[in-house]
Image (cartoon, rainbow, N blue to C red; front, side):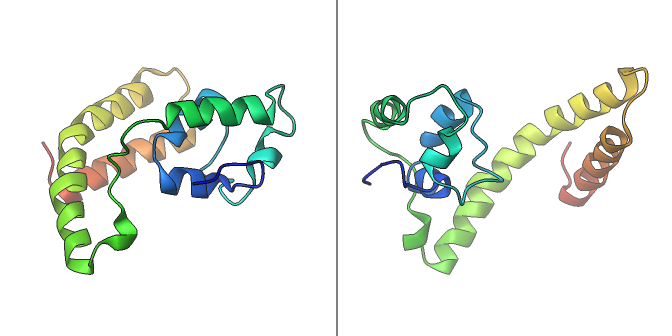
Amino acid sequence: MNINGNTKLSDLVITDYRASEVLEKYNINFFNKGNISLSEALNDSIIDVENFITELKTSLKGENDNPQFNDFSIESLIKYIKDVHHEYIRNTFPVLNSLTKEISVTQKNPSIELLELAELYKALKETIGTR
């Protein structure tokens, strides 16, 4: 991939998930602002675009083990989601659920959003059948 200031944030992460680590390091929100260019994302930053691109390219060197989901058949994609993603969720969800519950209980004045999040995690836990 040719990376320059006009490259969209979403394209960086879709092409190679490792780009997300560099974007997160500099607090660049690629979730909600994936449609903006790298130059736009760095516009209000002290980070120089060319230096950022150099660091990004360095972090992307080596083998990319990210599956190319666009090349998957629908059957293969479903199998991947079930075998990899769902298994990951089953293994990590109990920890996330516990932490969310703990935060909502231990804060003196938890926000409504945090209480709602704890309830959503509880409902999700029941839905997906985790421990």
